[in-house]
Image (cartoon, rainbow, N blue to C red; front, top):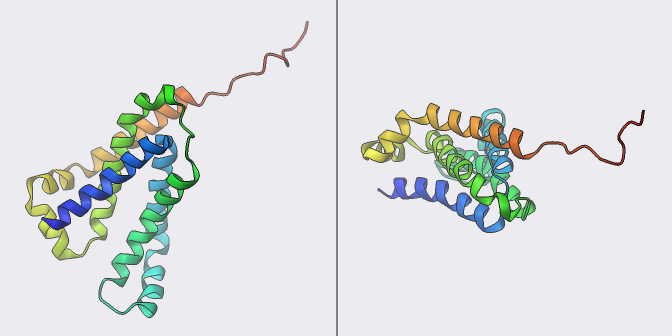
Length: 162
């Protein structure tokens, strides 16, 4: 049960901090995607390096979790107030989908015992079955919000004259 609570904390805390600090959901999703790429391409090397410093079986898992969560934490810290208060409600579904994506991407990083405990629960099994849908919905929401809210506004001063 504690593995499921850890997974819920991983999903909920970044969403609440993003709402509190008014960080754009687009930036948060990009941070999750960048963290996943870091895990994919640097996870094994980081696990070996951390394994030389820290003794224990979980050094590899810890290194991968750090690689996944570090970009998210830095983005929450460095990108405060990048979301206007008028657009906060628009970003709430994206932030929730991004939090679920973070949970879905962190699930395979847990050790096998923790994964089995999560999958034994009905919510963990639902998360496992819905991983592709969660990531896809978050990506589509990110693109839609990015296209709708981050349009380039043409300068009125520099219009062509006849």
